[in-house]
Image (tube, rainbow over all chains, first blue to last red):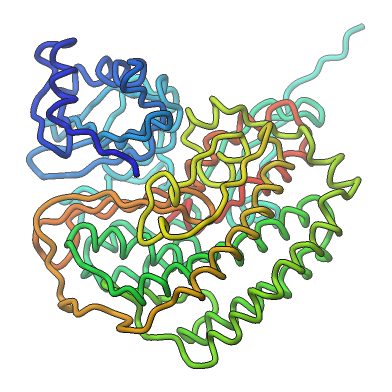
Length: 146
Length: 367
């Protein structure tokens, strides 16, 4: 059984290494500030005891006040998982750093979130629409898109 | 005098039989050798995620049929499991077994099609695929018996399955399970040591282990690269912990290994089917679940080992009758990330079999 790590405990480990990077944490997930997302992701991937080598799912949710980018991470070696989140409050230009250089699995998934939700992944090597055509206006999965 | 050359750009698809649907590959060629592949997709985009956010939880089940339409039973399965996890619904024992039976039948049907068309891509035009379809046809007949459909089943329900199996189902399934190992042996004799197949697939389109993990490849593509990761074992859902089966893995991660892993998985699925039929209990086929289900506020990510890889549903509930967010983690979309790595340096004809060995379904990629 894949062990879901307690978000609060993982958050403690992250906070020790990067003070001020945690925005919120509960049992299910760790929310980090979007500024520190990349270094936290790098820490989760390269720390031996955590070893999150497999980014299984990446998605974004529109909560109208903010966007939440959700990362479901698994470690194949330790068979445990964690949910990492980052929030962006700027509706016009929601941006988080891209994690493609850590997990290439993020390539299409970030493009999809950009296409349908309008999240800008800074540093993505090829951030363009994935499913909709290039001239399309708007991002259909936003709650205010009708 | 040096001859001036320049790269040649070839559009493969969207209307091309070898792309298994409406996928477009923008291939850069140096002579006949692939130097770059860019994927262009979305020709079949129907906005299923957006549609789902405007429907009740039960109304989404038929939408999931239209994702990977070659294996719609497992799509249903993944979705209802995610909703049950979100709402905390218990499923009757008999329904659990029926779901496992359907999922493993679906895996066999999917792999038959995957292997058959993989050989078609190799140029073995229609002969192997018709052998495979002989058995797939029997499976489709069985599916038709339980739900009246041959492609989009819409069989699973939140809390169980839509109705119990008819009387004639189990005898027919038992006959199939008894016959199937013999048919797999037949495919093996016909194909596995075939010189043309070996020459075209051994060492072609290698996906190294660390790239497979880094690109989050899943299913047979990941296991062919020697990673023993099967969600049925690693994170058992439903009642998979009760069955005895092996996880076949490849050695180098070439096209042959992906073919071989699928062949072995069919044998394992037959084993699971045998055990499930023997243990199938009597009882209800569906729990009592309110028609307008309102799961508590929260979110869930449920994933299963679908025939093509890890199929996941990310659901966010705001305690209304429709999900606030409905996201699909489609295995083939993410398996395609590594296509470039597999294809560069090979010829155009190899690109077609490399694509075939991933086992793509555009209904799922484009959603």
